[in-house]
Image (cartoon, rainbow, N blue to C red; front, top):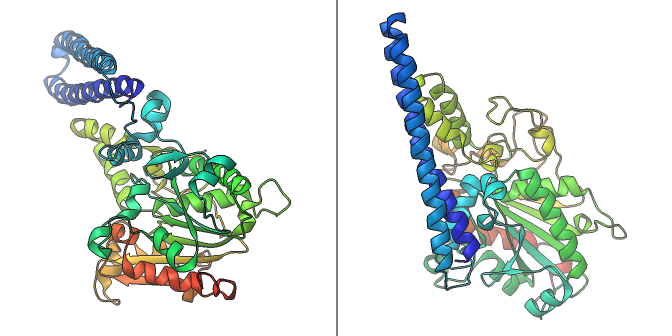
Length: 420
């Protein structure tokens, strides 16, 4: 932990504990309000005194917790002896990823030392997208790269999900296997999943500009693979960057030959939709309004998953907790092949349970972008792989998924000589 991280972590802890006090005050006030209204006007003088004392008490408690958090953070900062960032330490970086997914927009505004930045990762460390750093990191760089974008609350480590169990090697990933079998150089990206998808898409596009310009050899082929939210970020980046041209400033979109989305909620995630509905319902009753406030504090990145938002126009004019979608149609990137892998927990392909619950987080029709009308995303039938008996996180690193990835990416004449 670094000293600034300790300070911001202390402040955040104070805010969190103080927030519990605030929610308690909301519940206390709702109950008191119901009691005083039942008694009638005769209780008004008592109500005024009660509200004043209660408000001052809870405010003092919240302030005390916040001050304690700030003090604790500064004390911890003075005792820090290990310069490694929380986001880089093997024992804490997944927790930082989760925290960023849950409240990444808040961290970016108020506690930037804890907020993850869009960037390249290799070996558990940041990798700068400049020629020297990339040459040193990839001495055997190939003209074909596979860029991996993780999903909500995940990090680049998530691509190793159950690797030891699946392959007997804890470091085995789609990237390492594509490098071994097809000659792709894997490139890992980490980002703050609690930010707007459109903001992450813009930053990813900028990162790709730098990566392509600085890559040690001339790039011929870029494959972008996104899990869950990562697929939305990839589509957002391509939409904001345009089609690209070899002679232009944004040449990278023109190098994207294939995209693969793994369990991506192109039409939204049902869990976020249900949480939003629950938030509205709880907000109607005074005694449960505190819980509505707690749920509403989730990150804007999570809220973007409600309808699969991709660009700023999807949310700029809408309330953060809107129940109706205002998203615009964003077509698939021209000039590339687009592939989809989706899963259902049901083991039978024709099971109605599979369509109802999907992989537990994303339903098949959302993973396909299929609205049931002419607005359906034009995925070719042969470019869709539907797997049964798997859940959402299995898609991060599973032999069946890799078998399909390899088949799709190897089925091109120009790759036939790779690795020979």
